[in-house]
Amino acid sequence: MKDPKKTESAGLTRRDALKISGLALGGLAVGGAMMGPGAGRVEAGEECPAVGECAWPNTPDVTQRYSYFFESLDTFDPIDPDTKMYKPPEPDEMRITFLGSCIPPVRRAQQMMSVFVEVGSAMGKPDQFVFDCGSGVCANYGAMGIGFGRMDKVFIAHLHGDHMSDLTHIYCFGPSADRKSPLYVWGPGPSGVKSPTYPFRAYADGTEAFCRNMRKAWRWHSESFSFQTTSCAGYEPPTKESWGLPVDPVPVWDEAPDDAYSLVPIELDWTKYGEVPGDNVAYHNRETGVKITHFPVIHTRKGSIGYKLEWNGLSMIYTSDTKPEIHSRDQAINRDVRGVPRGVDVFIHEMVVPAEVWAFKNMGLAEAPPPGANPDFDMTVEELTRVQNSSHTPQGAFGYLLSQINPRPRLTVATHFPVADDTVECALNSVRAHCPEVVMDKDVGNMVWSFDLMVLRAFAGDPKPPIQQLRAVVSDYGFSPMYPVIPNQNTPKYHTPDGEGDPYAQIDTSTEIPPVDENGNCNYREDGY
Image (cartoon, rainbow, N blue to C red; front, top):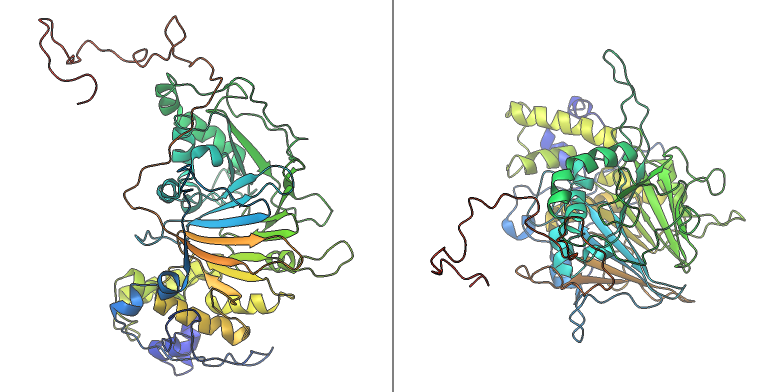
């Protein structure tokens, strides 16, 4: 990435620099493909060419909408009209739903990161996984009709708040709903990075320590809700062998191994990437046919990882946050045991807007001011450039990375990105500067920018059918899904002598205003009305 100061020293203003960074607004998405000025491939050793001009300042019709998502995608109703419950995937389907898709700071249109992946029953039993669960995403899960019972396996790529904050909601409220089994959390082990100040300690910053400390922090909540049933008779906890885990699944505290408040970390060696076959397996369930492996990426601190899921001849990669690096590239090339590149079906990789765009968007400006005109802006750009260069993949680098993956993924998804017609159009130009064959079209396209409630449906077959790009239609005012009655529930922790849950066991009711006073007068109706 070029230093902004070097760009300016070449006689270019900041506005000129924006012009050559691919911020073209020439064509907006209407009915399918996003059309914009093309550009030839950049060869090694060449100067990066201009690929379009910026038309800042912009108008709301391009800055506050994402036409491709709202006008081009067919809709998907996640609720079965007969059962009124969430529709599971077809037997041969891998379904990928974006429940969060943005980078901080928060944005009403997009929650933080979370990707829900489900597979059908073609290989045995259906299975489902949560990849990251940043702040705000549980509202989208609820609107989709996805209950907590389907969110019991959570794969965290790194322990930033925008990737794990809603783990609190999943853990705390799952047992009150339809998750009557433990919560399993995968994630990287300790970074090994030592503090640069005395006593130069290496912190316990891995997933096991995170879960152990969070379990302590959640104690008041879990106890207060334990007059409700939190386990069922007959549940058999998984073993290292049955789920193909790298470690034994041991709860971090003293809950029973079948209890819904049992929190089970599966800590992964983030340095592994399959150099030795099988050394990076996170989950391999022979009963459902799902295999999930991990690999290291580059993001702010050692220990960030990406994941690859393989099932029934289909494959998906989720890199989460990373600079452009070789492991994501090599995993997407996906060589078989003979060394033959197979490619992947869906390649989900982060992308950020250029630092200057990031700065003026976050500051509420219409465009980048000239150098020196706004010192706060200049300092913000410098800081965001450091963040970008240390931790993220800007749009031009994304295009270069994609150009190095052969065969190309069937569908590449840019995520962790603030989508709008202007940001997506300029990013598309930058990607095409390195990878001209990129097409953004819901029917024949090979790349898309994610948005909350985007649903991708990939089906097994020979040949494989096209990957469907859909938009889920949900109610902003709906309630969380109805929970089925779960049989064989065990006695709650706080219970009456007859085994019923006792909601009064932990409180002092001496100051309560009762529904009926001592004279038999009604103060209020006990049934709530």
